[in-house]
Amino acid sequence: MNKNQKFLIGSIGALLTGIAIGLLVAPKDGKDTRKLIKSKANDLGGNAKDKYEKSLEELSVLADKLKDGFLKNVSSAKDKAGSVADNVNERVRGVVNNNG
Image (cartoon, rainbow, N blue to C red):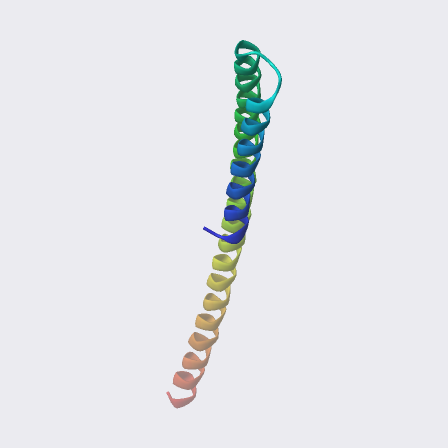
């Protein structure tokens, strides 16, 4: 887990703790407080789901870019290897023809 992930988890934990403490000391009755907690939890869950889905989309795009780059590099390496093989083949034929 990198520093950004640890910071994000810590921030979310602190946010939830702050919300819970604020709601518990708020001058509302239990029923209203429970409704508010449920509403806030649903909002946070929805936001977390949205961010998760957006992250998955971004990772998918990045994976596609990496794949495309890899395939281009493989194609380029194949072309260069073919060119080297052709060059070696021509030189061998030249040496054989000159000695023959």
